[in-house]
Length: 321
Image (cartoon, rainbow, N blue to C red):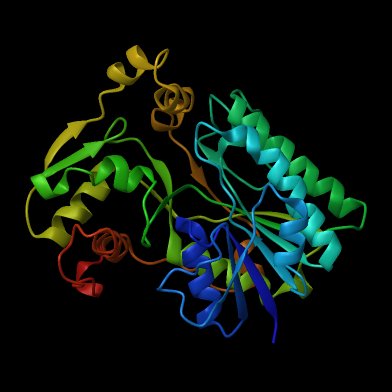
């Protein structure tokens, strides 16, 4: 049985990916700082390991075939990203493990291309974008040197799954219990979203088709490239009521950004809410078969249930947009 270690298994992405690999029959090891496994990940083996402690990470991943890199520091502490990436590379080298990793769209900078393919060149214009490019350059160097094989799957903003910390739960759905939909940007602007259960299934598909992949692969996950108006309509259908539309008060964040570190970091990436973009892939379907894609209505309904906005799991196909 193939063994996979999920780094950052307490995080939003890590726990959904861990669940997908458990369901797919893998021997799953969850690696968290506390060493405790989330209750929803029954069947996984929980071990302690800190992404900033290289030796502890190597021990925590001993004997696995695949390391899924779900490590992600808080938004104001991205100085930890490269040290963590270097430690993950060390753990992969020490254990002869394949590196499975998520990517994002920060690499492309502003103005961001309206359509992002797998051959779209990087042009980072923010510190976070430059960090992401440096991380991916590290992964490529390790692969080209024959030390660590990396399969990277790039996705948009997350929604779905339990946990907190995404634009969907922190902004979009934050006031839905009060009948309000909060748009982070222009309501008719196309933005790339990734429904996490679909993204997790795509990672499983890649792990099952390694024979079709080279030593370094950078693939895109086409999720839901939709507008806020479309998400609002799907939310209203799921909730069975009309939502008042309001906009995120960017002027407040910009005014306070010199004094509030988190606001400053959010403002630095605000172009993503004002410039349309979508991810496309010429290769993913040819590798894994049909790309997982839950209809928007069903995905939004399930996401709202996961974060406690929708009181009952009434998320069937009748909710699909």
